[in-house]
View (cartoon, rainbow, N blue to C red):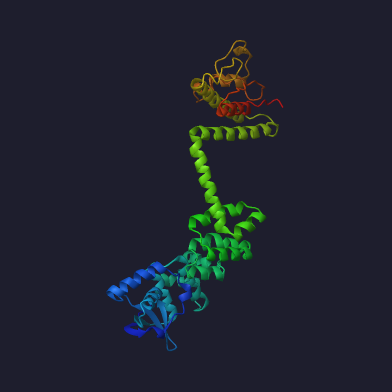
Amino acid sequence: MSSFGIQTLEADLHRLDLRFASLRVRQPRAVERLARSIEHSGQLMPVVAVEEQARWVLIDGYLRIEALRRLSRDTARVELWECPLAQALLLVLVRVQGRAWEAIEEGAVIRELVGQCGLSRREVARQTGRDASWVSRRLTLVEDLPEAVFAAVCAGELSTWAAVRVLAPLARANTEQAQTLLAALQREPLSTRELRAWYQHYRKANRRQRERMLAQPHLFCQALQANTREQQARALRAGPEGAWLVEVQRIGQRLRGLGKQIPLVFAAAQSAALRLAWVELKAVVCDLDEALARYTPDDCPRNPSSDCGPAGQGRRGTQDRSPAEDLAQHGAPGGSRSQARNLGAPFGAGFKTEFVVSSRPWNNSWSRYKASACVPTSA
């Protein structure tokens, strides 16, 4: 960029043209800090303006002007740049002094440079020392936002995250629903965490549920938090025993689902990898069953005919075993014998299991899990 003259002077606030005020995000806390600093030490850093048609267009320093007005000041220290407006806008993008700009603010200035000042994206990238992809990302960030959403962000009513991650995708899918959500958030704002949870549930909800969620997002988040607290309380009351029960029930349901897929999966020639995976799973089931028997000897009596546990009388000899049974007895290449002991019949043959009726619900769940794990495959 070429050099230009700079004048620093005191100017009345009414002489400043706040043309780009709508492109800057409001930050009330930052304004309060600036106001306290100016009241204590005066205006240390001048604002930046460019003269255009007898008006001084404010380029940088909108928060300082707001702080001065809050203090009922009539004048401000102004740094007047003697350069074209486009050059001034490009320069403030590369300046590192002062408050860091939001990405959406940078995108708004780039849109002004491309749309109003006639610069190309490549020229903006060259003069700001950025690559073309950075310029495109910033520009797309602003172009994808509806004007109402962009205005809400600049007014401080909506965070940049909410605008980009929630409102923009929703507006592309359904503009009317995005406007409804924006109006609700302006009435009753949600935190980023609450809005993230709301959006996750919204994406999975049906049409009727979405209508209720859009009408009262704050109420939905309150109900969600209450439900979460109740779940946490139930988990605390249940303790590790309750968590164990829930997990066993969940695994049992998944095993029953696998049992229904057996005719489809094994319609063709059986795969050795699938058979070996089942053998390894049975080894885990047997290990758990043995541990449960040690800790609950009165509730889990051993059944000599069970697949899990030491081999009982009447078992077939090694000469009658199928190759998969021999694999179960001696283990897969590279596997330990402990993983393959007490495996019973291989996948592909019917076998028995015990149903233990116990006064403890988690023992009953374990029995149901074992029943699920022992689904005959001859069907």
